[in-house]
Image (cartoon, rainbow, N blue to C red; front, top):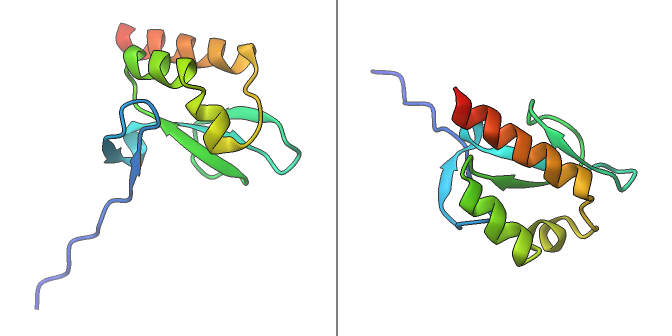
Length: 93
């Protein structure tokens, strides 16, 4: 009997609403202390929201405050700055 294929976890981008494999997305997490930060490991404790690596999705999410709505706390300009830098770094590769 052949081994069953392992199912890859998928998450939905808050910008465009399309589902992607979890590893392809950037996770923004609200920690139990109420801080928002980027989670590159995908294992930090807290409520998470995901963005695909597309600058347009970040613009949509920021304009509609979708990260704030998903996380339930305000997202600081520093976190948005880190997201923009990460997207520039991704595009540069």
